[in-house]
Length: 411
Ligand SMILES: [Zn+2]
Image (cartoon, rainbow, N blue to C red; front, side):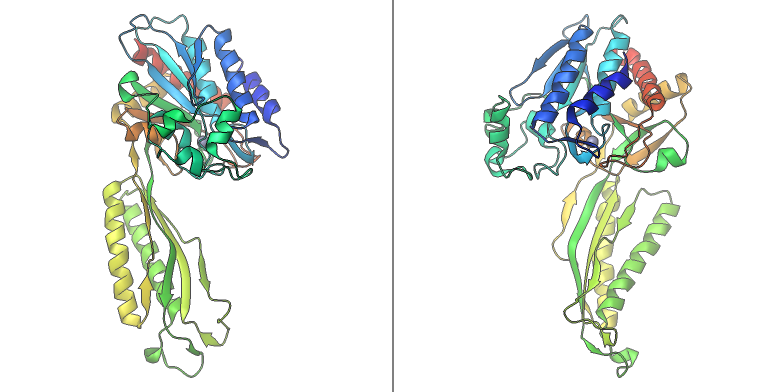
């Protein structure tokens, strides 16, 4: 199968210079579904579309009693994004089916084109895969509105001929027992594989997070020259002491092999009150801590609160982390990760293991107890931008690994 030509067709159908735009439940996402459906039919796959628009492409196995191996990803894309985020997983799935059409297999191979993964359109994580498993709240079709149109999910679904009723009824259109396992090939969205000159990686887990978007430190505004250190309640230095302690702890834990990334995305004194000659009485900041290790996230959370209290008390400043949000990490299935790694070895494909920092539909499948794994493909310039660069040689390398692993899984 000519995967470069398939990517070209997807790009042409959703071109929105610079880059491509495929809004969730919009015409360009639908065009991508139509292109993939045709490619699947052309190689003899059985193609169907469920009530919410999930594209299901099946290469049947000889033993209908065995649940198929499932490969999938999403076909929507952010505004002026790249052509590969999401689409690469579906293209590789169909290309793998083409490569395996004559291979002996007891299990079938089910390739899914999942709807609505990019949260910039509808403000819900993994909307399409969560809907697929009946996990959305019943009011989601009416309360979730698309960012560009302001119209409801139900309205956009209806426009394409789909039905929000299963979502309202929390009806699962796919149950974990219907599939043997799930593999999501996806471009890497960070710089690691390019930097390390590796075409593919096996994902060991999808990082969960602890987020404090509205943390603050409150001390006392005072004259910069007149107040000795002991009498100050400097909000900026207290907040920064906490941030410095966090970074030191991050370095130490990383040195012990822990998976951890920490970000202070917002850090500012109050422009209405601050001045170069004033001790700042207020600091606002955000903390975003992610790890694939749930226990480490809990431990970091407890440590942060204790450290904020300790530093605040020592400096006469009230450090308040504010409301937090938690997302649990998703564990990939060790046996499936090992199968992909064995396939990389067998096909002499240089590789490594890594955590995924971004969320993916694969997290939903893992959450549902489906043995799940991801195969990352080297991609320059990150993702969600028009410069995403998946080299077709790397796509072919990923395909070789996938096909090799599938030969074992389908047998
Ligand atoms: Zn994606």
